[in-house]
Length: 124
Image (cartoon, rainbow, N blue to C red; front, side, top):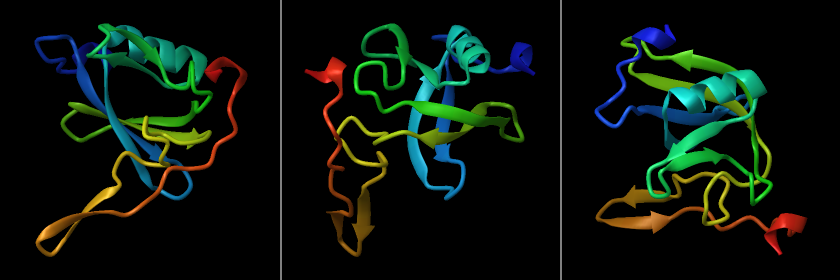
C-alpha cells in the first residue's frame, strides 16, 4: 500500500489524527515516506513540517505526543488516518484539537479554550 500512495509534487500525503476512543478529530498534517516509516516503526506520530522543511516528531518539544493505535488509508489511498492516543493537546495553540473554530450562523466562534497543561522539562 505504501508504494502506491499518491504523494503530491512535494512528496507529501495528507494525514488526519483522530483520538482513537472518542473519535474526536485532532489535527491535519502532512507525511512524507520517511515520516510514515518512522511512525510505523516507533508507534508515535511523525509528520513532515512544511514550514521547517524537516521531520516533525509530534510532541518532541511540548511533550504532547501521539501514540498511534491504528493506521488507516481512505478508499482512494490518498489520505492517511492515524487513530491516536493524544497525550496532552494536539494544537500548537494549547487546545485539545486544531478544529476549534466553528461556523455559527453568520460568524465564526471559538468553541474551546487552551488546556492547562503542566510545563514539561523541555519547554522551559
